Image (cartoon, rainbow over all chains, first blue to last red; front, side):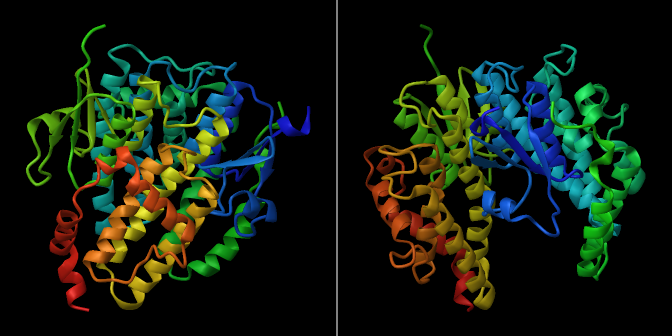
Length: 254
Length: 222
């Protein structure tokens, strides 16, 4: 393949943001080279490709770098038009998908992370907020799906499915570490069946780290936030998390 | 063709609301503007945006769209003439990246500046000046971020005016000064001079007064 057309993805195995991009690339059937980054010891290339945020994921295509997972997903959809679309055709439906994707990112993810990083009264408050947001999303799904059953497979996953998957694909690990059940079929039937559906998609299954590893990640995130000597933990993290490699994942070059 | 009904729920002072007005005017779309009192939100607004209950909300033939950047993309995809996003996917990605940067980083820093004091405020000013330096890297030699005419990022970046007015209202030194940020300084003047954009900027006195009322007390105690 010509060098200019090559696609590279700089990522980190535990990052849900990176997972979004990998799901999108696989759905579209785009071959790519994956570069695992050590976030404690970032590569020169990463700092060069993402000088503003210095974060993963970074997609490199035609020698140019694109950062921020949602921006990358839209870029992928607009550049590779042959694979399944990541957004609907109709402008109004696209607007609804983008609205809810933004909601998942800003309102849900941020508050779930707050629950992970807090305890006691602060955590109680954060949990309450997450349930309020989930209720709004459940209502939104009724409007979004318009009463139709939303079937998901490797051919029709879109950006909203991908974003929600990157957050709640790990819901069982979240439950175990936090002792809170967010994806409750009784409270949120549409959302729960949706989450179940996308965790069964082959592409997602292949990319999802095993439950035990996810539990470790969430435990670590929690420890890091709640322990005063965060700096020491970070150094340990670099060693600890690095040792939990991507060995559970199949070869990413399609 | 069926008659189109376009409504915009906004506030005169909100830079997010202003984004939509500029986009609609650039496209020559006729719309009805509804000024909202955010301390007493209308039933219509709460009905059209029950999730966030915020402005701006665009209602097109009865169908609501919320979130300013989402609305801008909707406008560009619905009224295809005078595009505000470039055609090339990479350039579109850059416009979206920097618009997101403004929403997440710039807004946060700007809000902190008007309420912070002393060393903390100085730190936030340094931070926002660095952010604006980063933006200059995207603008380079161009007249506007969109090239010869206003584009997605110019419209999104109008929030910089909020900071400029704010600093003046609070008697602060110029943050976006010509010496430190010549490229962006030039851009701002071209933006304020643009025929379409001009129509959407509130009268300066009114803007200054609001700032003094809202944030004046915090700086007076310095």
